[in-house]
Length: 567
Image (cartoon, rainbow, N blue to C red):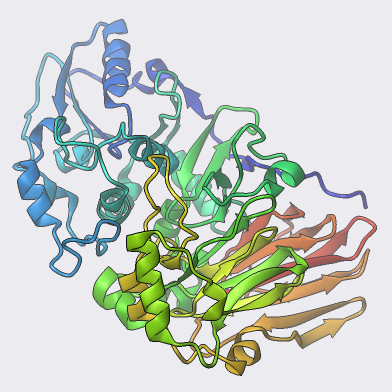
């Protein structure tokens, strides 16, 4: 069998219905007297959507009566009061996940009534709250909103012009949770999904065809669209080895599978196609995707993520920790915390990973030096307090909440972790500055409130740097547990296949996530006859509903792939 193709940066899943392009055909079925609601997130170019819909109607001789939901938001001070938190009221970086409903952001939901001589077009976030005859959802992947906010050109949900720039604090912890819940609640009623990445030539898929495609996808393995971002410590492995974003300054963060942001491409690989959030698939088919036991525990939250941290030719990550479980729930509002693992895709004995405290670490001195670094710009030797380990290729490091850690320069880490991903509580960031020349945020208070002193001394190597333990084996293959802790709800395994061999597996009612960490790739075949190729460094989700499947090594070399699952 020949090797699979190289890394595919835009994996696309075929659909039986045609993906449309442009507003003319999309609006072809609208008739005089109807109310069309076009809902969607803040970052959509709503003026372009309004112009596109109205021009399409005008071309058919129809008049449009426009209602912009943005004109009906509550006063900004009222929205700020609605979303304020006594716990983190003065925190510049974090906020509890908002539990507000989108309807709460409006002074009053408009009641347009029916116009006998026009098509009433209600546009903007929350448009579906208005009684309507047809519902479109105009979407824009979250990476666009984050880019706009970071560049200072975007605004937050309900924020009027003239009130300053939007903030990632509100975007991550208020806007996205509110908008996501709203979108998921109406997903079953959407008549047209509109992808507005090209605001003047959007692609779209009719609602029934969208739901049919997602039903099909919930029963077979799939890949999400990866996204690679730039940061100050970023490296160049993904550019050099995977051919990703060669013109970017670096490819520090590779989001292979992060449910709150990942999208699924539906349509023709060469276009047209639409991008749909993974979370919509999970919201519509939670038991098929997650499995009954996982759904019972996590609801519609997809609980595991895979992403890359690339420091090849870059710098050290910050040394940080993640919240302990009680703090995560009480302060940040997440029902489960950010346990992580580092799998070393690229490393070596001359590279290092920061992990755990020294047995005799003076925590008062550590806190004092961390504070001085923030307030006085004084560097310090973090290794006086935090241990380092050789970053041996294919070693897995377990990182429960509260454990100080960070990857050193020259590594590629495959993070296999719980889905929360925005809570890196930094102890020390090497005095790095942002574009404005200010120190990057360091969260000494949060970090030390969550620091677990039990993750120290010999216990770190014993508990968090585990040796493989074989679970099962066959002719030319074996499956090992490489990371398991009682306090972490997921575990990581690795399967090693000799060239030309195959291993049988089954989901047993819980989804699996696979990533090829060595070799040319694998071919996964399901009991229903589906065939799915996976190349080196790619990530594949195997829904719980798949059941039995077989994995075969592809190419002339042995293959290793990791597998994560909820225990």
